Image 1 (cartoon, rainbow, N blue to C red):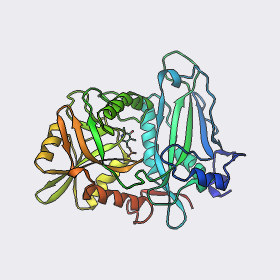
Image 2: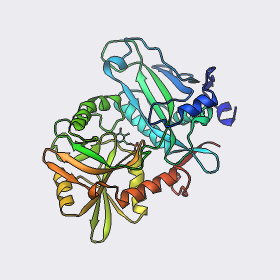
Image 3: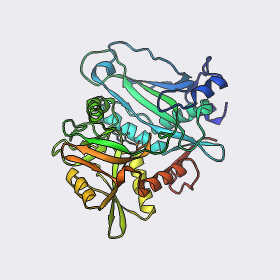
Length: 370
Ligand SMILES: *Cc1c(COP(=O)(O)O)cnc(C)c1O
């Protein structure tokens, strides 16, 4: 037991069937993304009138729910995603987890769910990472992916906000997203489906946004593409995001490198990677802009050679270059379909920071386990 646990308000109940070192090593070999889970999870219940109850760290496993639990009917469900990394000094740190805690609460507020104190969010992460630190992979590009979620558990079919909730935190060792090296994706610009509309839940990380996106993702696959590019709901013209990632466009203008990402309108998910890259891009000497950009601007700027790269970003894959775009208005290639220098540079800069190989001048790395 270390200091993190003894000051915890969580009850620590270690698993009696944790994986053996051999079993763990086997499961951590080529773990992929989101398929392998550690030995433990944190669960904290909430009841209206009582607030958040005593949380517990316990063996990872199924949870029991009443079939009338409102999440199963009306979908009050939100989640987050952040990562923990081995640092060169032997400690484990995670990248901007407080930003995830704040966004979790913004999502909760939109879905009429209770907010979780930021301190409790961080404490849960500390307890779980400390307990399962042997599950944190070591190589650059690898990490322990942390997945917090909250669901409505009251057994009642009336349509209203639930009076009971469950916060769950689980952890999943994840391998390099691109084990064979970064490979640009082909995107389908979706004109048939929208992800989010003004006044809706686009800025919230809620399960329903993903449920509504799957049919478009399937259509993209049918068109021979890897991912969907979402347009705004009103004009079907302004680019919003790529799948579950934010998107950046790189221009060369009068000898200057300009990175542009769609501005946050309420229908976009405010990515923490997006925000970090805007800052890192400026420090690299690039101009960074948040503004609206249309599909025709994308197509024309590529044709005129002014736009040289496009990439998407998010916690899971960090930076994914976009090599080809397809739409009903035509197809075009970006940077000959290979990774460009700006995407490569920003990716390396961010990865080095997260793995503690570059100085953390922003205070973004939070030491979780000493
Ligand atoms: C989570 C998410 C992102 C990326 O956010 P990060 O904080 O960078 O991981 C972008 N778009 C959508 C729709 C998302 O759900």
